[in-house]
Image 1 (cartoon, chains in turn yellow, blue):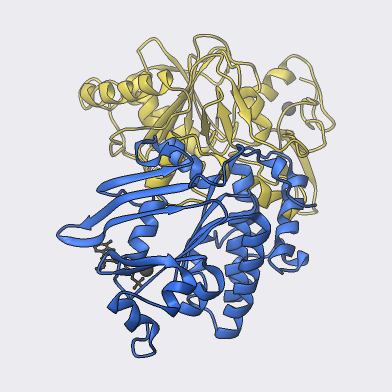
Image 2 (spheres, rainbow over the protein chains, first blue to last red):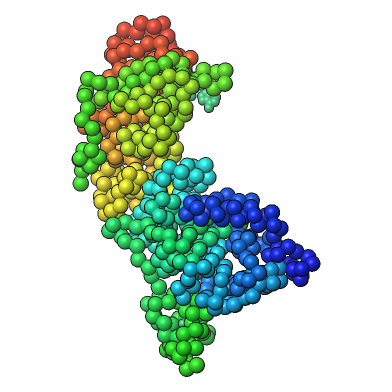
Length: 292
Length: 266
Ligand SMILES: Nc1ncnc2c1ncn2[C@@H]1O[C@H](COP(=O)(O)OP(=O)(O)OP(=O)(O)O)[C@@H](O)[C@H]1O
Ligand SMILES: [Mg+2]
Ligand SMILES: [Zn+2]
């Protein structure tokens, strides 16, 4: 990633120029006004590859103010290369404070997870989105999918779920599970596990979704209803590995499977590293954990 | 399981009132005429055949009627409603409920990446069906009605023969018990023996379901078998229309005379 240098001399606050940020803010405001609707915006080149979440980075850049405390997570972890690079990018270009703590953060940029610790009013959660169009799977024509959203023709989403059940005996979609927002727009929540879907709905935080390559921004304002699609006889169900966290003993958090040695040893640990560390600090101990 | 008319309640209708009334329908492509000044009535349960040489405007007329293309001039009334004045939402809704459209090439009318059951179930889901078991039950029932074995329900259409694909397209269209079906050369790309079987099947379905049909074809044998009435087109205009047997046995217009004589093979 490009070294942005000291933000005072080389770059505008948070890298993007003010005009670009205003354009992105207009798209965000429109997205908030029409929950779940994909707003086109003129995505800018960012000094990082598209796969790194340039859509989320641009949304974050447009939202940040100097007083913010930024947290960046990738699959729930604060310490992956991707998360560290994005966090460092904004430290350098915006000089904002950073944190790994969910409650302390004012803005969280995320890839593939919603934090376990409930979010609160005033916080902003920014998602990195690779493919914003939930209908793309069965209808590749952009003109047609736009029309389907406009006219609320969402039968095709259920065809996708039908195919899942026909092939696997159950709805096998476990990531990027589509939701209907406030009874109107069907939305792709980005590749979060469907375990996280219930947290999308009625969330006190502002949720913003940015797709860089596809140039789309959409949003869920606080307390917005987002219902996971399903069938009457195959209702939506969340799923996780049937274990407790081996480090902190949490029963209800989303787990990653980790290989511990080359003898096939493995353990299950919270994917949300901040949540797991917090529990251990409070004295919770899992099967393989050591007392703090 | 069978589909009962109560599944998709329909208004009581008067068989003496036309289901579709078309007046002076005209569509141009720049300076070229697609179809011009076409007028006719279609009554409930009636099958109207449209014949004419290549380029005579049959497909243009059909796609304007079905709302796939916008006519430049004229009026279309369906069940008393002005189709051209309808909102796009209403027109597209009609397209997945009351109306159906069978394409010549099944690839244009099927989702090739979706199982046979998903193809048949799509229209049900589009109008709000949300019970997987019932959707699948209806799909299997409809596969049976078009003579496709129930154990093919999870196969994709790409593994079907041309005739099977066309029968699947028909099942996919008829599952919501439409009232009006548009067909553009439905037997066009098929072998003669496969055509004959498909025609028998179509005739049975049209009769059993009381469908109103507008069918475009090159093949006079098809209209002889299916159509109550016949419209002959040339250069975008209707040159003759009437009861099928009358038009074919006693053609009045010189062009129709050519068409029914073996001299001109359309
Ligand atoms: N999309 C288009 N753009 C321009 N001209 C068109 C278009 N579609 C059809 N035409 C012209 O309109 C006229 C009617 O064509 P149409 O396809 O309706 O005939 P058809 O009777 O269906 O012919 P065929 O039997 O070959 O299918 C022809 O002159 C054709 O070239
Ligand atoms: Mg044609
Ligand atoms: Zn844990």
